[in-house]
Length: 82
Image (tube, rainbow, N blue to C red; front, side, top):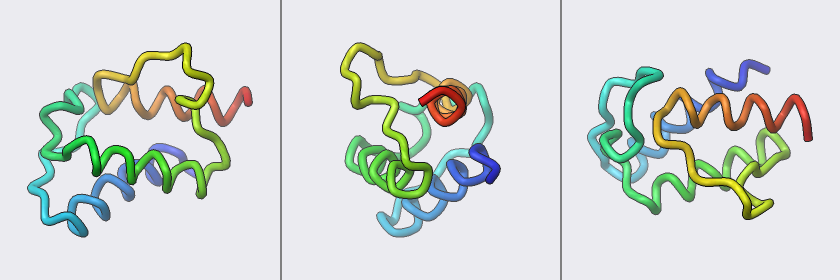
């Protein structure tokens, strides 16, 4: 499974479902400027936990990623090393 593709797919799907105008997705896109609100990001995190089987935020000692590229790496690292 390509983790980045799945994450981008979820960003696109959630934006459509919540009628949000999604900014062009790139690694340096700040999540705050993505067009998604905190509810949308929470939905994405929950879906990714179901799909990928990990929640890198669950350990509580990590700060939330700032850019889309950081977000993808966050999940890639969590899937590789549980």
